[in-house]
Length: 87
Image (cartoon, rainbow, N blue to C red; front, side, top):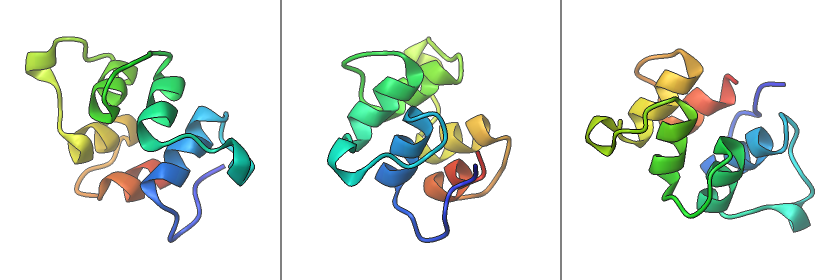
């Protein structure tokens, strides 16, 4: 299920961390928590968790937020949230 237009980055990360469906609002995690849950990591910053999810583990090679979200989505030039909405 792709994301809903107008959703926030936090909502999209929670959707992806929840297997593709939006969880109940009471179950939402913050962006960092949702990114780590989706990536199967703990304690990383949002962009770090997303890079690990993409298979980039060398911090010197990390992409920025927009870059890693576009890489995960197979898109280019989209904002982070717009890219994640396509997944």
